[in-house]
Figure 1: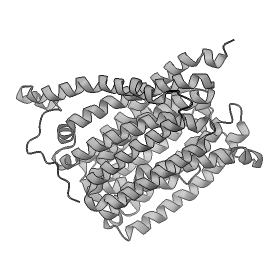
Figure 2: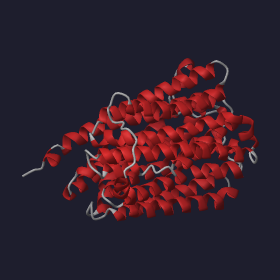
Figure 3: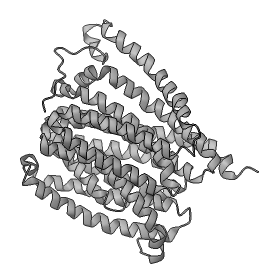
Figure 4: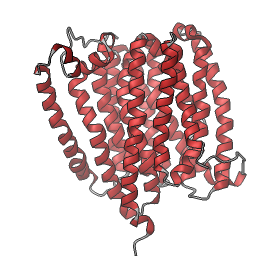
Length: 464
């Protein structure tokens, strides 16, 4: 007899995939468009200061037990007391860490003049910590209900609303203030759209037995998220101290490309892969992993091939002359982001099948080796740093594939068939278009429509 979960798996996967695509568009395309606007309004050094504050906030937030999300998913539906306990803990930690963030900004201001010049405005970014942690509990409740629609639409509403607020402030003559408003409003609106009208938010209350039930998995998952935050953001803090905020902005543009793929993959993990992997029987996981790898290869592989062949023209056209030096970073970190996106499929399975300790070791090694590479390669320039991080992320992907080899038999063959063939199918037409597009002759007034055209006097060098 086929279980109800197994019988509904295919429709749920298709429905979740559709909403995940919509959420990824809202969580990737809208922020990228807003970033382009602020990159044109502000100097690279000013953008670098905003990047530094956001990176610090993300790392501090990772100390606030964000692994409660995975712990709540593993409690199953109806664990009301566990949700109350998790929400209370998250609120306390979020409030405390927001104050810690303000103190760290004050300390950084003594060493980095650009941070001191921004003043108390950067403290506002710390509100991201409180609201992101508070969102964890109602988001877990929505995931348990498989509420794909609300989880996807909230990202679109929040990013559009934050972009509108930040843009209005910027257009009134305060572009840097607008950037801060945008960064902070993102988290506030995500919380509002997750909690309001869903019935997912609970009254905070602590139960000791619930803490005992969730402690082990919450701790391991929080360590995973902590090292993931370090993997995503600590390199930028190190670069800011070693190279300066202007070069940090160039590196961050490449990181934006990488983060685009990671954000899209995270959308699929949160909305689709984690909820379904938590319900699937062992025999169904291989098909789920293959589907996940194929899906992210198409979604992230095509843009990676596009950026690898056309980065110079795209950066020049989209961001302007001041940002052309970031083109090689966009190529390298785009490939790195694709590898990390594939790794997220394996990570989603490990995170909800009581294997967070394995995932903790993988991410810990990834983060510590990444920081070591940044420190060791920074004297050789940001291109060397990016190349080292890309190779490290490819190695981490191989490790995660090994950890899930029992869930997907003949995983090496699956990668050749699912990933390599799908990536080739994406890359071939894009490469052909890249070869032909620079020779296309459009009327002078329409040439801006061809992002493949070669810029005048391109520059590829980035000074250390």
